[in-house]
Image 1 (cartoon, rainbow, N blue to C red):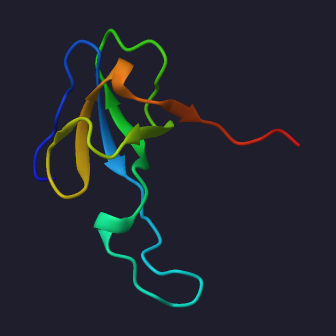
Image 2: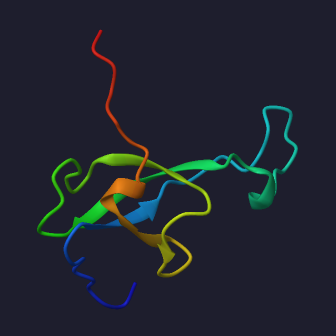
Length: 89
């Protein structure tokens, strides 16, 4: 991205996580065949966002949000499905 985006209100700017595009057997999986639920990292949050913080890993539906470019999307906070946290051992 060649510019800085500051989300307004309850919006969250997310950078897509790199997805494995090959199966364990080496078959290349096109993006259209990958899961409908995706993950990414919150890189900026609006001033009224309560549950997501910068650097959180978030889960969202494939066909939600507003596409900014090939690697980034903007979401309103309620559209995000979950914040993913590491398991405690």
